[in-house]
Length: 483
Image 1 (cartoon, rainbow, N blue to C red):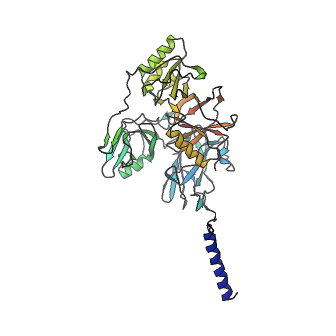
Image 2: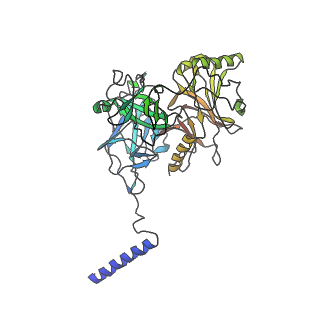
Image 3: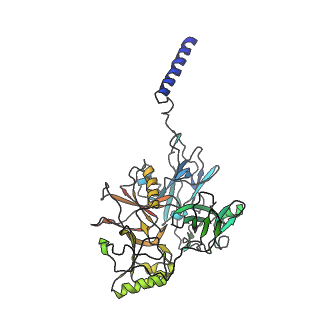
């Protein structure tokens, strides 16, 4: 080809590009995102329950305000035969998954602590993929780990005790710490999970670090809040849980109770101090009532329950139930209600039922059939409306084609036993015979399918189901399908 011909072709190419730009398109705009490489060297870190892999260049996308680089799926098998990755999210061996969030990472190596997800003996595999931004890079294929055989222990790590805030002027952070953080209750490879809440119970931030990381950096605890002009005035709290690095010897600890409040005021600054929830044993404004049955009569819609149900309060509810010849102690309220761990024994052989009231009707009913066996503080209130419900609903609608309906439970994590829940979900347009239930953990940014919810829908439109998991409950029309 002559130089003249080449010049003419170049001119035509330039002219085509200009015309395309004027037409509102670009010859380069339709380039498909480049697929990321699957993570290499994915393996279990000894007996810790921590998955480790080589970091993938260019992995990362912003999800729910966080830079997320990886997603994972955990499988449990009865034999050493590995799971299939052909359709991993619907595999019957899936234990839990995180497909809209990430893992911790540090330079060339990334890792994630899965110890809290091991629930029974068996062979565990984890599949990990790198997340693309959807513009320049697409998600990678999954890599699959080696097998880890887990033997369930019977002893738990000690629960973090003596919670307190610790402020460091050198970095401006408020740290979550406790009296036994650096004692012989834990070893350096054990991890701690701190979750920060505002006074409405909304999750503000969370942090997970090993004790070795804290010791190496000389930190007094886990960094949670660095106040700035955007932090709303109010009280802030945290909970702590210890995660075992010897998962065949120790279970994770129980989640601690709520810390004292850190009171933030833009004008006065921060003042860590005692709990200011204002709960009181003397508040007797809650109507115990005789219940309203499955029809959910709204006669007690204006009832107000103390923010904490203490032993004396629960004892009064139990006495009222027994004097009426009932088998259920009933409580109602319009806000967050916590039953203290020491109060459950007051119920004896009675069941316990709590109704959260809003707009003249029951939003959520939680029924516990063996409450006397419980020893931990539990938040028994829940909602199908509100900011948390909308935020989680918007998040899942963004990433899933069959966006689930959402119920927010104030209790995070697990209940300690199976509970029966009824909630007034809006099931418009959904196949009521094909509902699938999930529990979403906001702090860990993970969701787990509730495998046997035993659900039914009554004549009043309330969905009744059974679960041992709390957090945000998702009800989907069939299994979740990612967009």
